[in-house]
Length: 317
Image (cartoon, helix red, strand yellow):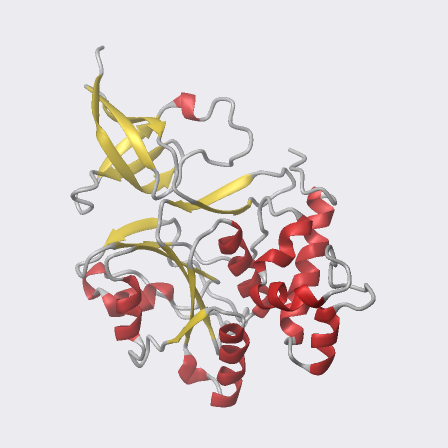
């Protein structure tokens, strides 16, 4: 049975051995396509070799469309896959901005989780914006403290309330004309925010579990949605655990912007900011110039990366 080359396409959704694709000029016209077995051969690093956002080469036959080749990626956002085996889980590729959605109330704001995702984006060279949703559920003083922590670190911070439709215009301006990824904990309101932006999407939402204090997965797979205002957004399933992938422990300090700046005052150029003498970071921690939450997440991540990759950062897989 003969096969003929088809124009390149963009992956909108991935599910086991098949995916949904669309031509770049019309992301609304999605079609199913099989994933060729050769894509899985010899790739032991990735849990799944194809991700939402991938640009792919297709072939077409009487059996339908099939993905033959994944074209070179502009960028890749990934985490370490769950399980004992050390593998990379691709989350999205070829996009312009990561929008990290967090919240107050339920689930509560987690600086450790936020910092892990911010570091992963920095390591991948992906611009990031921090969105704090459900700001109507917290005291203003607490919100201001979190905003100050991340703005002082150099991040762009946007406060929203999907319930009261606050900050939606600003979020719209952030997403317009770009391909963006919405990522964050389960229950923070990613789908609710998207429904405010584009009511026609009609994405499912659920109440957050009051007993577990965490969200339920209403988005069960990553999916790219074209936006009427221009651009597209990749809505992702909520996460409860985020383990960074491939970051050498000795490079972690490079992905905390404020610590990178302060660290120039350390006595040792390779200071790990843990217990070295004349450490500018530890001094800033004592004076309050550096928030304890940022240093705490740094230490926790450093220890985890060292346990996985050792001191060299080499991938043992």
